[in-house]
Image (cartoon, rainbow, N blue to C red; front, side, top):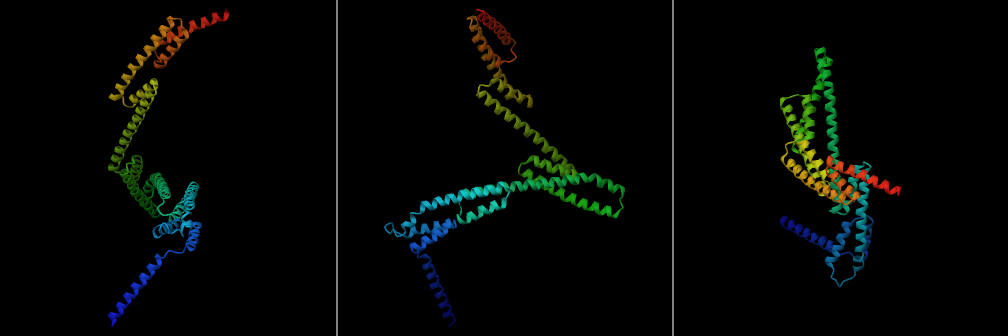
Length: 349
């Protein structure tokens, strides 16, 4: 009898489930659905609207147009959706600018509940979280550094205090508190250094290990700091070299040859034995010499034809290429004197 009762229960539950499911599949009337959509639109519940519109598309044939006046609102709804997304973005950004980070995050979260998986809002929220986390990490690092520096500044005081009153109970209690803080911060600094090394942030790693070594000196930390600092110098040198080389190519491309030569000399100042730089400078000097010689010869030819101003122009172009060329300077000085005499004679006539 009990088995029959259980079977009856199962059948009843099945019918109930089927009844609920069939009710759920029943499409509401156009008027009710329209009222629902208007309500959702007022509340910016765009996911509910999209679901309702998709059901109309799936469940109704093209010749059945009783829901058409609702489908005709798609453009208006899409415009409202875009405006909602833009307003959400603007509001969140303003909140962030006024340092209201949590309120900005809440703005994105509330919007994404109404319009799930919207790419722009998701990307902006991700960027906001990343920026916030970076600032939090930087603040925590600063706090750790400040505490470490404070403890370091106290170290000499406590060392002296131990020597002055080694048996004073109050002093010993104070010293023990200091030592606990020192060891705690030392461990945090070592963890900070390890994480920075994993992320290849060598400057932060050097800062953390250096402070840790000052609080609790060890040969291992001393060697580690020395090694990191050598790598930082090497990286800095390479970065400076790369910048100067890029600047050389940019200047050369614009035919700014003297500027290009200056960048190569800067490179040689960083690394005097750099073979590529030496070769580039040698080739550039030869190219500049050829161009300067062409300008000098052109100036000589123009001068012989008594075209003094044109000759001056050519020689001045040559001087831009070779500012220290004494021959070009003499040619320009001579031509300028002749030009002044001609000008003076013309004025007296």
